[in-house]
Structure formats: structure tokens, C-alpha cells
Image (tube, rainbow, N blue to C red):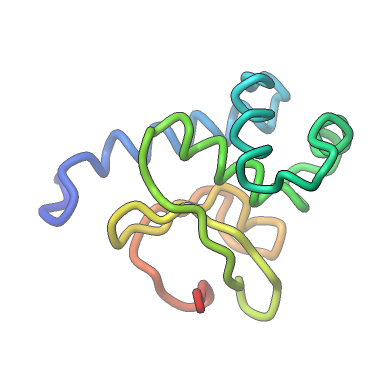
Length: 122
């Protein structure tokens, strides 16, 4: 059943799962990831980070995946917050949290839904 608050929720959920699979397999568009992450974290050596991020996934990939997903969806805001006590970054579209790396903290591999515990944003 479509979400009455966000008619594109099914598409967002599908793209979140596609993004997760792309990062798990290492078959994501590196040029999109480089461009999106550079806008988010301009002081980081993106190529060095990308070379390490693949072997660390999902750990330390929340910002990279959130910026990549924003570029894929062409909408949303990347927000830094917490997953329980851990610093964590997610994509917010409307009032929906999209998180494809919460499993690094024991959460689900893909979450698309309302902001609720254990996610918190300042």
C-alpha cells in the first residue's frame, strides 16, 4: 500500500535497496560517488576514502552512501546525527529517513521510514 504522506516512497525504498546492493558489491558509479561526497566533505581526499570505503562497508560509509543516494534520487538533505550513541549520517526526504548503513551498529541494512529511536538528529 502506498504511503499517503509520500507517494514516491516505493521508488525511494527501491533506490535505497539498489544503492545498498551497489555498495555491497562495489559496483556503484564512482564518478557520482566522488562528485557527491566532494560536495559534502570538500576537505577529504575522496579518492583515498573511496579506495578504503569498499573494504570497510558498511562501516564508515554512512556519509558516502547518503550523498550518493541523494545524487541518485535528486532530492533530500544529508543530515548528521546519531544511531544510538554512535555518530551517523542519513538522508532525509520530507519526513522520511533513508539509511543504508545502520547495520554497522546492529540496525537494519536498509531503513526507509519515519525518524524514530534509535535514530536522532540535532
